[in-house]
Image (tube, rainbow over all chains, first blue to last red; front, side):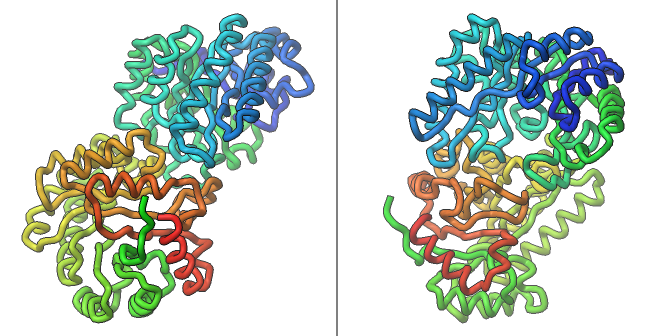
Length: 274
Length: 274
């Protein structure tokens, strides 16, 4: 594997949660980061248009808008509301200038997983015409099985590939996140399949800490855990993906630090480990 | 689904961790529980022979001895030590009168998962002759993917089935635990396959809490979470399994209670939810 350069480094705004958008933009630029994935909370009070201008004005690429999905509900009213919310997010993504939104597909603990999966498919079908019209892609992100109760009923890359392929659209693909998928014995095969169907839209990196303290907010910086990031990037690149590697870390431990120190750790770890 | 009777209820000693073996035995009997799965710590200071006499004397069935495995290590000395330890456990299981040991197969964060998987296979092969000689079966327990870093590189029932089938022995099979496997879209199919190959040796129940607070010790009592236990028991029984449903709950919250109260909750939940 070739070493990677910072030219392929994108950071999710949530990774440096304490920073306002303009701070994040300035600091990412100063650190040599080239891309940014924008979380909804980062543009509150700014709006997507103005946020897009700030980011492009500084010279950063907007990689994705995060995050849509959460389609399943036991009531049809709940499902309709989720579809409306996703349409709103698509409009925001277009105004921002983001080429895709990431879908955390959702799940409801009050109904079977297979029902949630069907509702996810129907939800994506309902927003797909608008996605096509706005030229914003939909990246289905399979989530780790520990999130199957209420965050996503799509828990393996195989499932995400099945779903993406069943929707037959160049506007639907998959986001591969090592945190959710590293353990899967079929990962190499499913990454190759994802690429072969032109569905590999995004690649997210962080690490799995051996002693994970919290199911949500204890992700590791690259190198802090046990994921073989070089190997997985090799599979992703062999599948044809040459885009940004997006650093997405939720961590109470790292958020508690001076975020300038953390960003320096991120860029160092990116070059050394990704 | 037919309702289940307490005649098929087995409790793991770890579930009521605070109780010494004789207390657990007396209280399980008084509650109408018929089976017990014995953890190693429960027989410390008693020894397997005497423990077996206490349990059988009270009239409980010994369902399994828990737990062997942890085969992978980066050093050959570590792997040899693990094999010796598993042989010792098999001797203890035979002395106890347990028909099987449960294998938490192990993983090492310092080597690739596929290397750990090969070492697991080699470890089971190394102890299999003794298991056959002692008439103690080996139940491979696939663990939830959130334990792939250091507890088990076998994380789906499909993998466990592959491994069990590759070993071609009536002394190797699988333990199906709903906590580890409930999320899997292939679960019904893999349970059927497990039964069709005569590999379904054990069935463990508890629940997955929607807001799980801890990766290890926050399992739910049956009914506290989102697992459809009736449906999965239906699949297990359709696959030919008619044995004990083993209650295995690690929970700081439930362990903090009066264990008599907890045991009553367990037997009520068993009849109502399993």
